[in-house]
Length: 225
Image 1: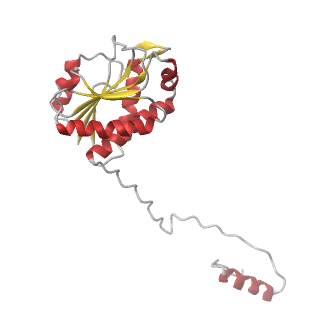
Image 2 (image 1 turned 135 degrees about the horizontal axis):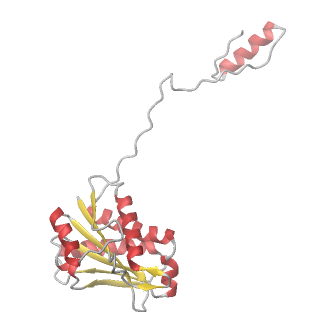
Image 3 (image 1 turned 30 degrees about the vertical axis):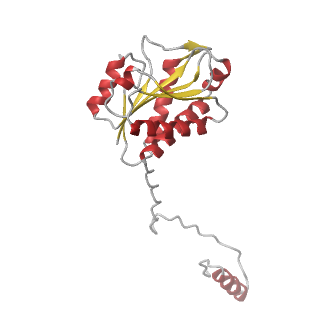
């Protein structure tokens, strides 16, 4: 499965700016976290519209996904305008599958964000939703110009929570499975460390033999030297 991750804005387009934050920086950080987490799933190929601070036209972003033959397109943004909370968007003409994906992903993100206002599942004629040929969702993750939201967005832990919610939603929507944990390899005898311990010295051999027997009963290897 090919997933294209789109960090909103970039380069000479910083997006919204407020409270010492720039939208383009936050979206890139979140998208990189999402990509890293998605690497833990089987059969997932992750593509990015940008991985650094560069400008891309909206049509270029959609074209990257279309050219790659992506199965899903996710565009990440930070809101502005004095509100608070999270909302997600699909195109007004989105098909039933895209709407179903939005329902699942939106719900998982809200679970991850905790006590955050749910602004709802919406529709908009955004270029990246209109021009992409695959199911596409755009998320608006809190308001950069709201002091309380901005305080959360300044926390790396909170950005990870945002990313985690997106990943949980994508995994649930598309039935992704985590890669199996590699089993620890059994060490060979040569690789195992052996430690020799000398315990006591006895003038009476019988006392030494008695200790050896006790050690053997407990599973230790013991000899008289």
